[in-house]
Length: 189
Image 1 (cartoon, rainbow, N blue to C red):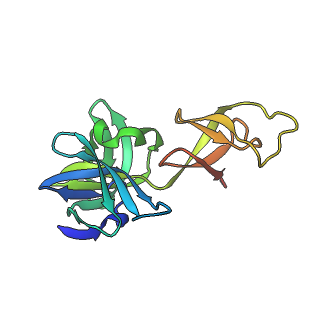
Image 2 (cartoon, rainbow, N blue to C red; image 1 turned 180 degrees about the horizontal axis):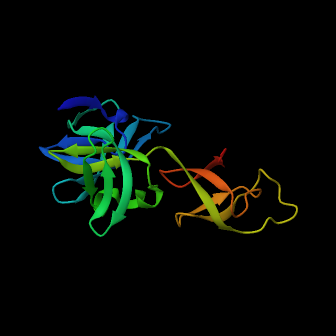
């Protein structure tokens, strides 16, 4: 176990709290105008899947569990779960849907992800920050709308709805953040 400050924890990290392992689902550093900054952590206990919410002072020490983190390539998904391959050993790992969670729509075939394993069991995965998808459906541009003031709803090829600038039309490839599906830019390919 390694002690780290709470503000350095990110989504996908694994911490040891009272002898039990928790994977972090959401981490946010809160800096109020007055008072001590805190880190809000939403975690899932690995043993039984119970979700817990904790608050730490940003400088407080938290025990980070040693887990094996390796890069894997996403292959496909089926009834067993999501299948990944280690590019060095060609070993395949099946990750259950409960571990992948809301990141599933952002997985693309051949995408490199970081899988954290504890005693050979996949406990969390971290996707690249950005992914490229095609806009399947969006509203037509309203004449007189300025480019910077408003966004319009759009549906991406992975089924996720997001907001895009008015100049984006159906068939355009866009880059989005995998954390929340927010539009970043038009794809350069």
